[in-house]
Image (cartoon, rainbow, N blue to C red; front, side):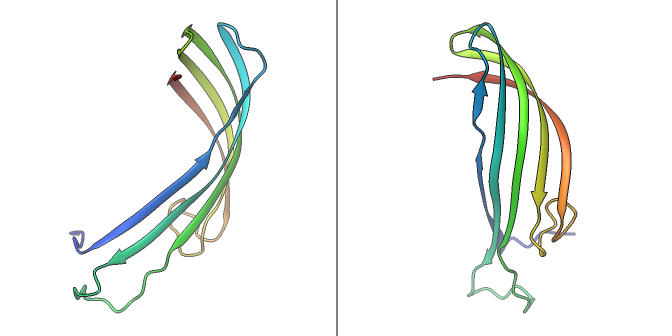
Length: 118
């Protein structure tokens, strides 16, 4: 199936993910949370006929989660780490982003990270 080049998506991701460290040493454990919104606003040029009369609406997906992790600091401004996550998402009824339109998903995850601090 060929994608219609006249129709594009305006995707916005706004996610806040603070970390709170138990101690700041060479090995630094932390706890954190994330909260965010994923917004998808389809649009097309109104002067171009796309072959459909169906209006696509903006979808809003929301997420929240907890994290526990640790970082190993090689220097003051560079670290490697691992993070364990528990996340929850609430999908828009018109969104297929998480494969469960209009419902709540709960999942876990693990993330390996390399961080440069400025």
